[in-house]
Length: 125
Image (cartoon, rainbow, N blue to C red; front, side):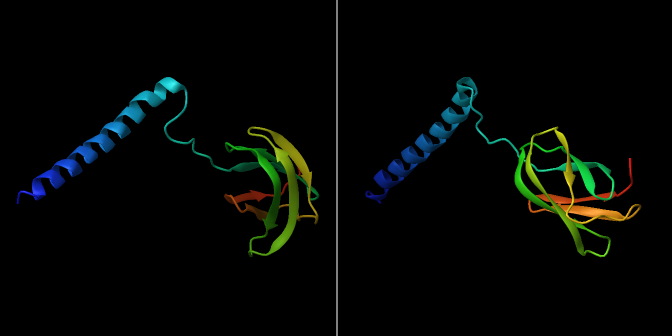
């Protein structure tokens, strides 16, 4: 039992130092101007208009879209068209040319690897 007491003491001291270090880190971070946790990023877009050969989308997410191939699927899940976003900043809206014409009045879904499906109806606005 005599040899166990120094081991327990060392473990307790190390544990207290780890807890104190973490508490100090979260206490000091607001004063450095840096956030203790990273910002949440999410990709999101909204279809503003569609006129068969062009689609206008708005970036409603946090980061900008850059070098993005966005696919267009019909209601059966078949890929019917795609368009390329070279750059689209947050809250920016741009018109893109589709590689295939869409049917007016039909429901479609946009898909990109980082966004959930965005459903829209292609109508000339």
